Amino acid sequence: MDTCHTYRLHDSVLYQMTLTSRMQERRLEEGLRALGLTRITWCVLLAVEHEGRSQPSEIAEFIGIDRSATSRALRGMEDAGLLVRFNGEPDRRTTRVKLTEGGRELLLRATPVAEENGSHFLGKLSADEVQQLARIMASMREGETRSLPKF
Image 1 (cartoon, rainbow, N blue to C red):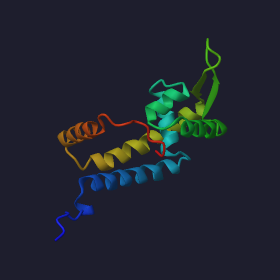
Image 2 (image 1 turned 135 degrees about the vertical axis):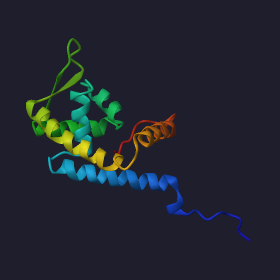
Image 3 (image 1 turned 30 degrees about the vertical axis):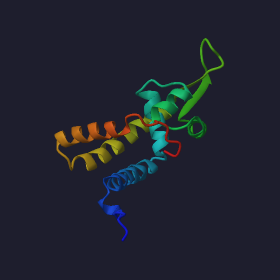
Image 4 (image 1 turned 180 degrees about the horizontal axis):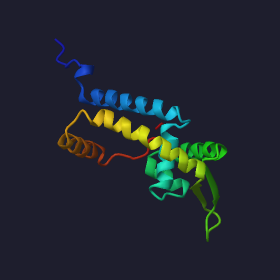
């Protein structure tokens, strides 16, 4: 007789976490897409404008994606007029990034989309549950690699 336990997919907390994450991501992506943004380009706008990240490596680390994904996003955003890349001072070998007025305007328009998405899902929880969930997720990520190349 087989003593191996049967894995029940829908009973798995991690599967439930994945479903929830995908649902909130999809909802956010739909709202951002209407503005011509992706999750990555949204995160780049935030990293540069609100978090003071100006080097591509800092942006990649902040978002949790690899440098090549960051470079692709920056190139597309520069082509769209959302940011400019320039050589750093005093070390001209470094690349710096700065949002254009159009990038800042788009960030202002996208912020309510992200806030509404957060309210939609987190509004289903009490304030205490939100704090507990944040602590639990931080504990689960502890010691794990930060990079998510397919973010």
